[in-house]
Image (cartoon, rainbow, N blue to C red):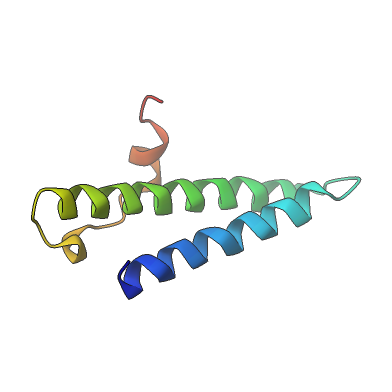
Length: 79
């Protein structure tokens, strides 16, 4: 895995840890709920970037050409 891939996965792990810490709170403030939503969006964008990089690699293209897509585009994908 390239350094960029490791960095992306490290960012995802950090977001997951922060999300778990926030979700373990007994009560959530409006600020915490907003941060949870932001974490989910950032995490989805990073996973999309990982998938793009993997696809480029699979088809002999340069994974460094993958670009993070805007949150609305990533969030509207069908699962």
